[in-house]
Image (cartoon, protein in one colour):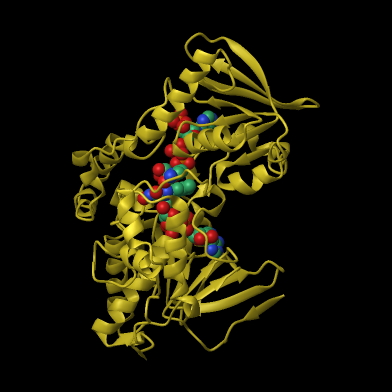
Length: 444
Ligand SMILES: Cc1cc2nc3c(=O)[nH]c(=O)nc-3n(C[C@H](O)[C@H](O)[C@H](O)COP(=O)(O)OP(=O)(O)OC[C@H]3O[C@@H](n4cnc5c(N)ncnc54)[C@H](O)[C@@H]3O)c2cc1C
Ligand SMILES: NC(=O)c1ccc[n+]([C@@H]2O[C@H](COP(=O)([O-])OP(=O)(O)OC[C@H]3O[C@@H](n4cnc5c(N)ncnc54)[C@H](OP(=O)(O)O)[C@@H]3O)[C@@H](O)[C@H]2O)c1
């Protein structure tokens, strides 16, 4: 059954997803409403039933990988009430946080900060509806506006209309082909499901288990540490194709690539040069681990050697050649890339810390494909379109190839949100709903 929410209403903007990217946009739009003297009618739809930032990965030891000063707003407007510092102040933890002497709060706390900020936009957010597709609404042969079709957990579909969409739906878990057949097997899961999936396994009740963690990025390392610390009955094998676990380069000169100004530098390069820049700095973000965590893992393995008690292993240079389910568990056949020697290992569960793909925008926007230029965007993140396309599509988090490595991260959120917000005001022009600028809510 499909229903249309207020059939006559056309929103200025519907945001798909209410993660940090679209939350930063909601904040920027509130500021722009004041400077422009009128607010845009914006609604954000998120498929989660409440606000959570990678909620199933929030292991207690996990820390933010970016300075808290790069929060939703401070780099653009340090006086904003939506800063992490004001959040700490409101929660009466500012002095205690300072005593920690860190720039890197734990991710549990950052999740709480984001949730606190999102609460201020509760009237503009719809939770528990998954956007399925974005379709064109034609008028006199032209795309006049867009129809956003969503579905709630009971299977009811809702249609809403908007002049613009901003797709901020984040990454999609990457599942290697060899594991696709295990889609409904609770023993094989992607790291994005880490906490809830582990709760269903016998180790949650202290029973012994052998668990394989596939991958050598930050997710794999965090799973290793959490299994070591929180599940004493678990033995872990970390399985990686690389010849070693490698550190993320977060040294200061390199870190300048995450400054908002660097986006211009990347965008203004020809395609081939952009590609070079992204691959040159790949090791700031992908298939790498924070050095502190690397050292902890090394320390754990070293202490095993001292005690002659070998609970965990890191199996480098291994590619997974076969995955077979047997009565005794899941058997992985691994080939050593240096020696070509094959060995079969049996596990009770497999965690795929195999990263994320950025393709959900293509699926959501497929009905508009013929009007868009292969999902390429302009500097303001607005999708390039054919002349008959009179609506606006913006992408947040899908523009790494054109805007650089910061695009999938938190680093440029304040600047990007303002750029998109200004572009929306410019392109909506007189069409905008002209609501009075709402008074800023007290951030408490
Ligand atoms: C475990 C983990 C930790 C990370 N830590 C850091 C870090 O410390 N620092 C950093 O800079 N980056 C980090 N990242 C990178 C991450 O991409 C950004 O932190 C940030 O989450 C990007 O925000 P986003 O809003 O673009 O995407 P997301 O945070 O992924 O949010 C997307 C939102 O869209 C919703 N959604 C998806 N599809 C639909 C749909 N069809 N309909 C409705 N809603 C939908 C989702 O429910 C989600 O709430 C981390 C990534 C992971 C996986
Ligand atoms: N605390 C935090 O802030 C935190 C925590 C987790 C994640 N993150 C962020 O989230 C993003 C993603 O990190 P991630 O660790 O999830 O992913 P990632 O860095 O992309 O790493 C994915 C890993 O999976 C491996 N892999 C992919 N396909 C494979 C296959 N078919 N077979 C075997 N191995 C395969 C890759 O191996 P190859 O290298 O051989 O390709 C790589 O080691 C990063 O931005 C990261 O910083 C942050």
